[in-house]
Image (cartoon, rainbow, N blue to C red; front, side, top):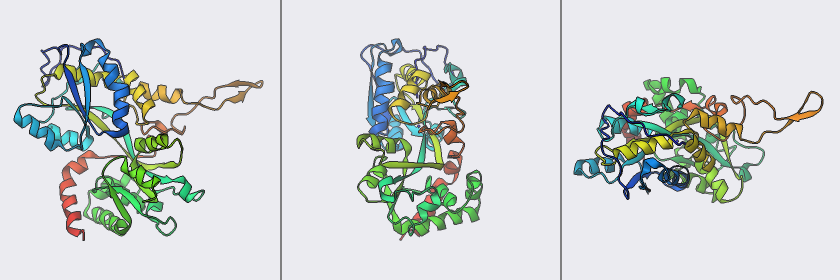
Amino acid sequence: MRHAFVKHALGVSCGLALAVSPALGQTLTVANFGGANAKAQQLAFYAPFEATPNAKGAKVQGVEYTGDLAQVGAMIQRGKPEWDVVEVESADLANGCAAGHFERIDRTSVPHASMLLPGTVQDCGLGAFVWSTVLAFDSQRFGKDAPRSWADFWDTKRFPGKRGMRKGLRYNLEIALLADGVHRRDVYAQLNSEAGLARALKKLEQLKPHIVWWESGAKGPQNLLDGTVGMTTAFNGRVAAANAATQSSRLSIVWMDAIYEMDYWAIVRGTPRQAMALDFIRFATSEAAQLAFSQAIPYGPTHMGAILRYEENRPRSAEPVGGGSTHTPLVDLSMAPSDLPSAPSNLRRSLAFDASFWRTHGASVERRWAVSAP
């Protein structure tokens, strides 16, 4: 799961035929996951892009969807794509690209590609932002004896209450192994073995009686606020949005062993607005737009310049230096606390989501789990 104002680059190849210029009065439709994320996109991406020369008077309309690529496939099959750009998770980007749902993007058509985080530029998409699945809890519920790890998430005796988890096995298998003492560097090696996979499923089975499943990103934090659960997995930005909505810092995040990945922008194959769609995602991944998005919701920029500007602008305490004068201290960003998933201090202690594992094994693992369900 951001920012920028980028000049239109001509000469695009590798599957994007961009001969037709966007006409005045057109609408570019962007499918997103809704909620606070969509509101931040409107503020940082849609409205500012409309004001650029490349938009040529076009409007950007956001529509909410669930991430189900079957909708995209059906549009393409009808030969009438209703959406131009879609926000997708990393595993779905690869699946959609393989299925021919998305246009391919030439890296040379993105002038600022060298400033983007590794993994941002893919064959069929550009990284929109970095987001994390984190352990979230109600600080009023536990007080000073707060949870600090996924092992605590499983400890329902010391920390009573239900546990919220996103429906399905994605992220939850990784979390189960982390809770069982596997170091984050070894999680996918374990999951790629039969013994490790069985271990993860068994660990998740232990917690099943206490789990309240959620699907909407807003539901995890809401379940904390209304007391349905004592802890939950959650998207970090949705936790921040819930705190902002309640004008409090009641909900807290454990960043240790969070799981981070990117959401991507992809262009729907066959849209007649390919040129405008590419202009939009170049704009949305530029430094200024990415910074604006992170300031609206704390999802991490994919543009390194935006990460640095965000962290530099965070308030730091002053320290007396030398003869008693006060200066802003130098800050090691690899250690400085941050609320951004892509900040160095959080990346260094998080698990990078492996989309290739889920592309290869996801369907079979989900079937295995479904068979074992009561």
